[in-house]
Amino acid sequence: MLHLTSSSFSTPLTLLALVAVFFALRVRARKAWNLKSQHNAPCTSLTYPILGTLQYFSGHWDFLRRATAEGTVSFHLASQQCIAVPVDKRHEFFSDSRSSFALAYAVMLGATPSMNKDFLRSMGFDITLGGRAVKFLATLLLNERINSNRFLLYQYAGECISSLDTVTNPFSEIYRVVFRLTVNKIAASSISASPGVCDALVEVFHELDQSGRRAATTKIRCNISSTKDCLHWRLRRAHRESFTLRGIRLVHTRRLILRTANTDVVAAYFLCDLATHPAYLTLIRAELRAFVSQFNPDETLPLSTRLQSITMEDWLRHDALPLTNRCLKETLRLRIATPFHRLNDSGKDVEIAGTVVPHGTILTFHSSFMHHSEDFYVEPLVWDPERFSAERAEDKGRPMAFAGWGLGKHQCLGQRLGKFEIFLITALMVSSYDMQTVHEDGMPMIEIPPVQLNDEVVSPPKQPVHLELSVRC
Ligand code: HEM
Image (cartoon, rainbow, N blue to C red; front, side):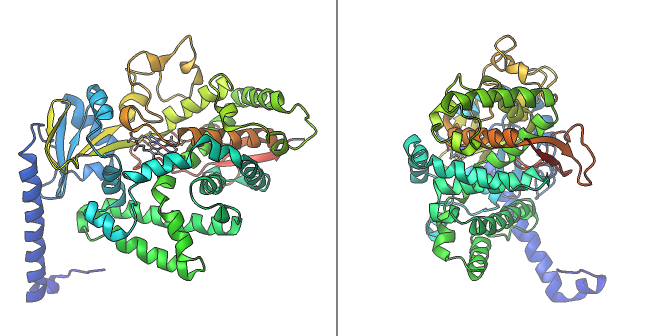
């Protein structure tokens, strides 16, 4: 770390370095300013000279809400030009097919300022999931592929869930279950066959995600973080720690998939929401029990055996699990508060929602514009699945009110797999255990902490939440 004291300033070298840094920042700010002048969105006043809107990092929801109160606004994060899109322009934001989804997230979440096609070529594989990778993923997620070895998924999920501790942190333990199931479907079945390797990879990925997040927030201040170096260094280290580099790469090429896959956090929140609403827990248990009995009524068999004949389509049939679907939708609405991003990488200026968006500009929007707004939902901070009942249908009151799985051009490709995994985990959990939420010290927790609207991505609650599990007879 660099420590500046009054004597440090006196050395000519330090002075020279400071002058160089100042000019470098000015050049970047000029670049941003030049871009700024090419669009017609007013600039926000919530900004610092040269560095730009640091408020975006410390509280993006507070910033986006205030900044867009009057309509579309522009801001910059050092040299990165951004445009914040207000709620009434959501249709244009979600429906525009010219802007890039993957590159936008790579820049905003991964701290990869120089992310472009050359950079990707230099990496040797497409870590952004762009182009062919999306088609590849769609192939991996075909029903037949998932159904053909669903027995293994049932077995793995059953093994993981039956070995949970009495007091368990669902935000780390359910991640392990989801990771193993998802790796089996979109990475390598040989890796998912080994719980030890899966657990070790979970740690590597956790470290990578943390570094991505840290880098994203420090990007403005130092702009020295290179995802490429960071990844290679960590992959090399993981390699030394006994995995084959090929195996790691195989999984790593799909890392973004696993990262966009929020299934683990959603599944954990879902279980916590059920545990804090015992009446719903009982109803969901009954609904899942009746569902499984349609396929195999023999209750003397272990559940993972009774599940064998149930295909993914069965779980996802629109009328199969109405209450479970409603409750999951409510958990998604309430618990997931996340900014959405798009990048104009078209090489030219485009007009979106009446605003000229210069090439290289990021568009940003927030799920809470709808999900946590009283204009869309009654008492939006309360977990109330009945808001999605046929009678109330609060999500139908205004168009594009629910973005839990995305809207328009970039709807979630993994929705079916995600829902299938969550339903499977929930069925195993509620049939195996009675559960209640507790604090770290084991004291009962009546309500789970309120959603943090300013959190960077879909993330577990800051205050740890545990589940106390008692095996059901
Ligand atoms: C509960 C779990 C999940 C949730 C809540 C979720 C949510 C979302 C949302 C909201 C979007 C749209 C983001 C935007 O418009 O900027 C999205 C897109 C996407 N999701 Fe998911 N997702 C989940 C699971 C998964 C899984 C399991 C996969 C893959 C295995 C996946 C792959 C993708 C991909 C590839 C896209 C981008 C699609 C495109 O570029 O058109 N997601 N997801």
